[in-house]
Image 1 (tube, rainbow, N blue to C red):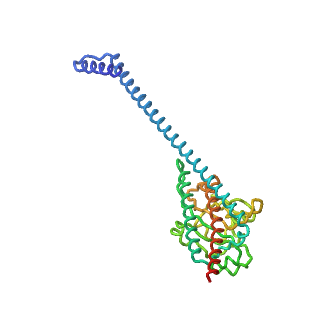
Image 2 (image 1 turned 60 degrees about the horizontal axis):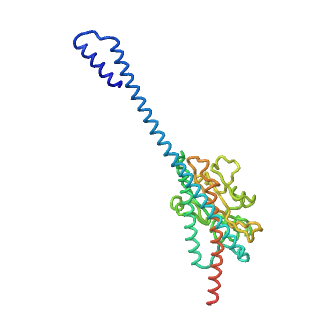
Image 3 (image 1 turned 180 degrees about the horizontal axis):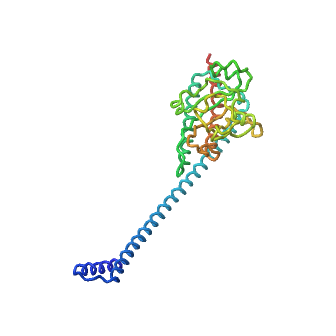
Amino acid sequence: MISTLLAITSTIIAFKEYQGQPVDASVVAIKDLGIFGTLLILTLVFFLSYRRHKHRCDRLQQISEDQTQEFKKIIEKQIGLFQSLMINTRNSFYEKSADLSSYVTFIYESQEVKSLFNDILDSITTSLARIVSNGQRMSLVGGSYTEEFVSIAIKLRVNGSTAKKLVKSSNNAGFDDNDDCVITLARDSLTKNDHPDREIRKNIYGIGSNTAYISIAKSNSAYFISNDLASDPNYKNETQNWRDYYNATLVVPIWYTENRSSQREILGFLAVDSLNKSGNPNLFNLEETKKILDFGADLLSLLFLNLEVHDAWRRFTKEKEE
C-alpha cells in the first residue's frame, strides 16, 4: 500500500513540475513518508528473513553437534567394552599359566616366531596410531585445534642381561645384568617412515631415567599423562633430543597378575606421543586415549605370553624330532 501511495504522489509531483505549478508541501511529505516506509518495510523483511535463516542454521549446527557427541559416547562405550573383554581374557590366560608367565623373556629361538613377533608388533602399533588419530579427528569437530601427528611406541621392561641380548649398543657397558632396564621394542610404521631417526632397539635406559617409568613402575600409578611436558620442570627423560619429537605423551603399563589378588607384574610400557604444536590441552586424555592404550597393552600382554608358549612348543617339537 505504501508503494502504491508513493507511486501516486511521485506522479502528481512530476506532473505539476512539468506544468510549472508549485508543489504542495504535504504532497512532498507524503512522498518522503512513502520512501521511508518502503525502506523500513524492506529492512524489516530482510531482518526477519535473516533471523529465520540464522535460526535454521543454528538448529542444524546444534543437531550436528548433538549427533557427534552421541556418536562419541557410543564409541567410548564400545572402547570400554573391548577393554573389559581384553582385561578378563588377559587375566584368565595368566591365571591359568602362572607357571609360565615368569618365563616371558622376549628372546625367541624360532625364526618363525621372531618374524611373527615383528609383524604383529607392527600391525598393533600402526593400528593403535590410526585409532588414536581417528579419535582425535572426532574430538576436533567444531573445535579450534588442528590435527596432530601421533606416534606409538612399545617399551620393554627387562633386566640388564636380557636388554644386552636384545640391543646392540655402545652404552651396554653401563648396565649390570640385574639392573632394571627399558628398551624401545617397536614403533608404528607411520613413525618409522616419517621419522626413521627415532631409535628402535638401539639404546638401553634405566627405569629411573624417565618420569613416566618412575611414576608407573615405582609409584604404582596406572598411567602417566602430560600435554605440555616443556612446562613441567620436574620431567625427566634420558633421551637427549626428545623435545624434537614430542611435547605431549600418555604412557600405560603392559602388565599382568598371576591371580586377582597378587601384585601386578609390569612387562613394559605402551606410549603415545606428539609435538602438540597447536597446544591442545586435551590432546591425550583419560576418557578416550587411555582406554585405547589400555586395550592395546592388554592385547600385547596376551601376545607376549602366547608367543613364549609357542616358541617353547617349537623347541620341544624340534628336540623330539632330533
